[in-house]
Length: 282
Image (cartoon, rainbow, N blue to C red; front, top):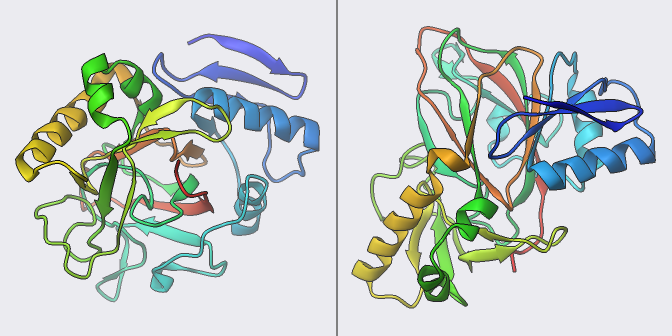
């Protein structure tokens, strides 16, 4: 991986050919001036995910940095909130037999955060507190590259189409096993969305939450979606992040997907998540 000079304030190092860059030389406990933050923002738009290692962050530090990108989304599971309403624990640690955090166990399929809402998350930010010795890695897929690599015939099939996304908190939080949408929050967005800052097009469907392409017969929709899922999960579009305590990683939900690998239930895993509110996809 090459390291390049991006600013007098920090250096960057590419994480993979697919996407991602590491910001080196920034302590997020300190206030960032507008020039430095502007360069961090540009690095995010250029690389889709940002990693800052060896951070020593309290909740307030993480919130302050996240708020530079935009308003924060309120957590819908208040039982996993410790103090700030936009900060949630992702953890398999249990107290009195109950998880202290959301999404506690095992593998999680590829998805884009809150795509089932009218205004999905613009960005998400995870800070690693405790990680298992093996597994629990996060996979990130580049949705720009996935769209750009589609055959022109498939691009034409998707043009002007919307995809319906749904999320079942109770039975489909990590893997989707059925198409039962009764009571599940859902919303339809363009199957190909345009990023408001970069103007680039991204494939906006995912295996965990996308249930149909509107306007197509069910069999045709299912066949097309399965092809798109397999296509966007091609290893050439993916970076796999192996967590270390002190990692702060943020990704752009408008042009990436992410998934989680399995890990032992006997090892502790705890990360702190902040989600940044986005705009309605177009």
